[in-house]
Image 1 (cartoon, one colour):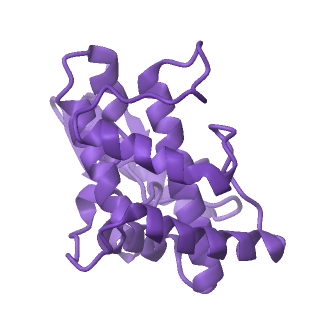
Image 2 (cartoon, one colour):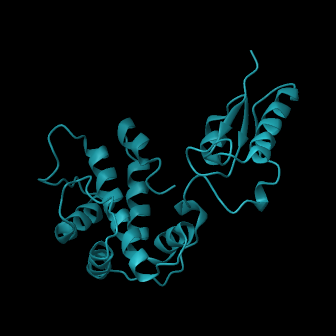
Image 3 (spheres, rainbow, N blue to C red):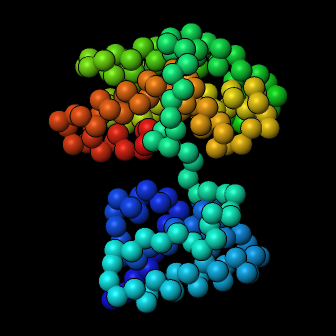
Length: 220
């Protein structure tokens, strides 16, 4: 049976290598393009059906004209951003500043996705110290981690809470900035971005398969 899939995260398809895949640059939930844009949807389907003419796979092709589309399906990942080398060295001090910006963001009615760990942002300094100890090779843990939450999942929650606080705080600093630009700032210019990379490397080098598996996506 010949199959064709539509991919919104190119790096996933490049890793999995399905028989035939078409990458599209649209936001999640819109694999065929925007509702009501018949021309765009026909272009996606035509490119997908063209893959059926390939005699064998795996084949991964970008949507024709995708280089002209301003949107993208997945946010910028760490692997796409070169570090500037000018970020502060103390994540905890940087966090204090970003927490103030985040409070301004919420004070202006901004919604937040911070809250996976259920640790209040005013206590995130402890989260940072936990991640630093883990990245340095310690068997670190936190009393706040629920007994039914595995360590690798807890690490992901901690990282996600910190990333959310930073990105939302950045919106308070530069309201007109795009999501891609904010992600490039996070990975390229902050001490947190460097710390998360270190955490990911420690997880990837673990002898524990679940820990290694959980590393994927933290700082790709």
